[in-house]
Image 1 (cartoon, rainbow, N blue to C red):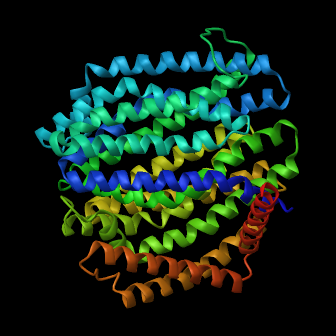
Image 2: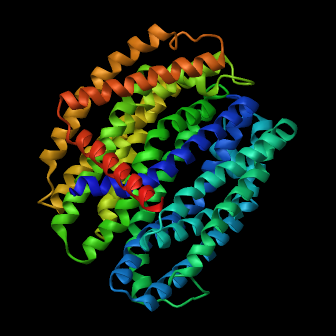
Image 3: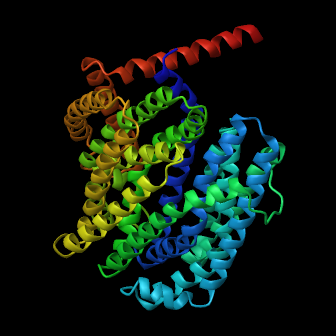
Length: 524
């Protein structure tokens, strides 16, 4: 079996669960849009999420650098070392998050006003309430991240991949039950319950692993190694948060609903990234970490390039599709209840500008995890800082003439530039990296996507998806036909251009089906 096929098959289960998570995440955003529209209520929710994420500046990087160190212990079958490093790192991170949450609770109203100066008074009050409620509960996504790292390292991908789906289910239930009565304040119940549910899902399998943590304040060499590797990532996280908050500041000065429109458009852009790019990096990170620990650099380089090829094979056509079908897609997904046609136009404009960045974000995410797997954190952090600085500069330049479209376009340009620089730097670290193979693969995907884009426009116009039919059911039907037709065109065009990924995907699916049917025959 080829390396590429093994990557695809290892990713398959995670991808399926990520698709479920993304569908539920999209349903969650549809509920928000239906009840709140692209208005100040949803602006408050977005602002609270961005502000509370600040406390992950210290803890998030630690959860990232923890995995390769844990993988080294697992590769050596050192159970006591795995438990020791897990215990000390989880304990330290817990104290950090709770301490930062406590520091931000009292000045929360001033922080919200400082970072969202364009909000009205009601929006500010809602954002402050949500910020104060969510701050201490940010501990549980962190603990879930540690649980995911441990389970993935021991080869358990299913439970961590399902956790976001459970989290979305709880948020959907809370918003549906309480949203019509309490408005956006209902999320002060939904988000904490969702974070708790996702964390508790990890506990049974985590407890059965050798790396179930206990309270520990010790700091041995492995703990210091995790923390030292995290220092550069913390610097990168600071700049990333500065960008997110600067973007919030600028967007809050635009007409009401601009913050929400950008967020809703970004959710659609994240859809292909979430169900495939995340699946690839989830499987690759522990696998590459183990290869690096065993000094298998040839296999490491091959797996790294295969990961990038697979995400680009899916994300390049997804970017083109979102660009050419932005308005009908936004209409189909969001336009109902409080979400008006004017909100659709605003969100679609942001989506068209965001879409080109999908391919760059996918490549940069894989490149970042490849560096982390080799226990090199300085380069991806420098890359993250440079990308954030470029993004902020472009935001300032483009928001005046282009408004929210300028903010979205600035992000697409900066992440694309960052992905290209990241590939260059990765080649310097891994001279044997087969970038020529990657370049040929990407060019074929671009050519097939161009053919697909033309076909998508034709099909959408022919079926009436572009104009809208006036019925949600009919829009969903013609939208499904248009998107499925575009997908078929892309696969056929890829086959014509002889893309290796097409053969690998079909070969892997054929192998899976053969295994499934063989198993059923044995059981019968």
